[in-house]
Image: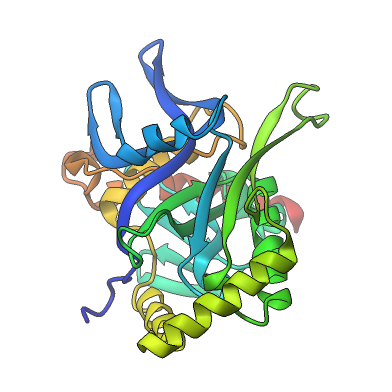
Length: 318
């Protein structure tokens, strides 16, 4: 295993409730009110649709607002990883990732571990637009039981709801989260910040037509069948945990560039836009602007600006 490289679940496709559109020469996120499943390949029109996108739509009479899924792991925190994250909008690289207690921050001396007071109490995070960033991996269908679709989001509502559901389902099933027949659901709500217009977030529940008791019974039967076949779920969880811990940051250079474009735009269109992103843009796979030879001499990088602003804010607070 290569040290420093986070080993993540194999990705078959993306689950989105939004997309990137071009407006006035700028690429900006746009909201949607339904799910879309895409491949990891894109052309000039955008991401190519996954074959499951069409088959799932044929099973519903309206918009695609629910997707039957299973979790890969019994540990809720392995299925959904959520952190406070700050990305450099120019390079697409993560600058600071924390959990509310400690964080890993890119500094001139390398990656440094520091205290993480959350974005609301962090001058560095406030200046750079730090916010929660979650990644959920799920399996859809039985074609590849270890391959997954990824849903990325910076929505407080989605992250909080999914986290609660995963913990609760794990508890009531006796730790058989990976065997439960579940479905992702799209829900709408209005808040004062949305000016009474609907915003959409992702929830998790038992599949339509089934009760929680029936889902738990099915989970026990599937778990017994897997154990009889020699399927070692605990070993799979352990392997995934070690893989995630193998790197400082989960997203690769290619992924983080598109994540920054989608979720950390200079001119965004709202926090509830949750279109998962992966990209292979070589132009974003560069070092921080401070070490980029193409950058004009004396022009400060985003990190420089953040550190200066944090220092000023700290001085004012003192």
